[in-house]
Image 1 (tube, rainbow, N blue to C red):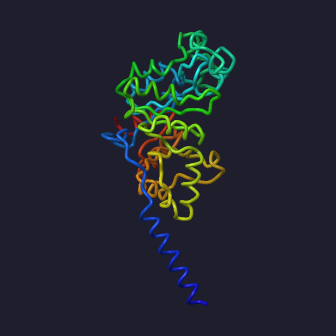
Image 2 (image 1 turned 30 degrees about the vertical axis):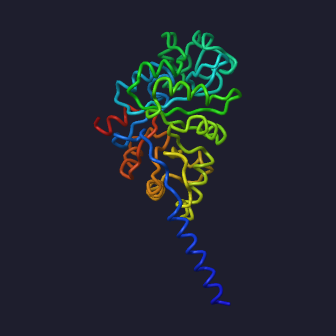
Length: 293
């Protein structure tokens, strides 16, 4: 009996080792060619210091020395891709309503910086300054040299075809990485635009993290180039993700690690020491200063 058990265990161990050897790593992508980590990834252009997801914020992030502009993409009623964090305009502008129910012209009438404040709502320094909701093509035209992280939402009207069309039109296939929390939205985009880099969706991150806890992340064959995990365990069912071992195991699968949203310079410094490939931050100014860029 003991001998039979030993034989079975040996076979299972052999199969497991074979699977670990044969399971492919994440495919490489030109998005990460010729870059020096860690990348300063300006979340919404730097929403901690400027009104996020606006041309103004992206301009300031570029001037400050950010490497990557991160933004949130939505589709309008007239099928234009625009940038705003939420599905509605209520929390950032002087308007109300779903972005999908509005045209680009209607969105352009709104004050995109109306509700932005960095002192808890005591003042609104950019209100009434003519800052508008930007379309993605405007940003591509203005900053063709930049790299981008574009987060897509799960919308009523699929965004994958028009978004992929814009990326191809402006020849940004090697300068854009698509992110999404939603597995369905990510699967749809990858099928539509397979030449563009992507990060792991929420389900893919969860799978990698849970298998990693039992030292089996090597069994994953990633379809993505990056994992962008939350640094705060409260954002991940109180399961700590950002550890040295997590970064080491991701790198072993050719996956880049870019945590969000890290605004504390001490935590930035710790993650940089651990070897992250980039940091998504509302304070790109602080990270640029920390790196001495």
